[in-house]
Image (cartoon, rainbow, N blue to C red):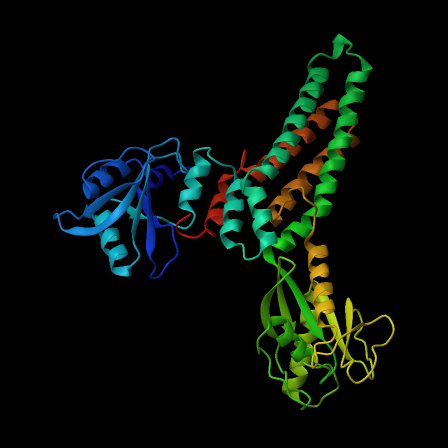
Length: 433
């Protein structure tokens, strides 16, 4: 329960659950204790639960608003755990505006970002991991992002975290028994057993922490920076990968002054390609600033692609992948990925190689992984507390560290200490969720 939030949560809220703008159908969702009364005010009577009903909606004066499909989803068996209704309206903006005004007149208010999911969390219909999975699924742009978000939304990661919490609780119970009944002379193997379980648990958490960065990179997308000297074909490569003209291509050196960005899908992974200014010594102040920014982008990129001229390969230091362009004029040096952007020779192989790199940087296997910085921070805290507990000689101190470990795990799913997180988490959702 969030202090001071009960009056707001007692309101009946509404929001557009489908995409904004003109469309064939617009879905307007309402949730709250007054949802039934409001449906009756607009549609005349409540339809049978969970069965679509065609109704004429009318405002307070009896004027028709729209002929719409109506769904009635009484709580607690609804997404928010409250009474919920959905109006499937014709998609014109005027229709949506008129029905929204009628809802306002009936006492409902527009929902805040993420308020539907927040109510679902408060009602125990989903935990924070599942709620964040919903947000990620709404924002998913590629197949790999969709699959990762779907695993999280379905509770796969929550099951893992809950399993860890259950094992910690059992370990703590044994530890408390040893503290509370020191004269009972419990078998030595009892303490040895739960210490061994603590080591296993710590190893599992550390393995998850090692895999987690890949999940976070997939959620936010990768950045590949394209570097190289002027006129080696960096901009041409960007245009070829984007399959449209993003960058100006010219034989004149120094054409690219600032970083150009384009988002593409490589192997199901969202990748932002950055074309940068050609690296060279220059007295041009603007070009020099572009070169400085190019090096800055490279330092922050997940992968640096160095493009060189196959006739005179000058490789950028710290490049992750070197591409020799213009192999229609000269053979690629040994060990380099050869391509001719002009003729297309070698381009399919290069694109496949970039996709492999994208998958490698974001692949954590088929198992679910944690995907956000707050998940990692809480899991690190829990693992650190378990490590500290293993190092404690006094059982009372060990028990306290185990409690800290459990609290940290609880922060991941929202089982404990969630109030301070809710505004940040649900504030990033779209309005209709």
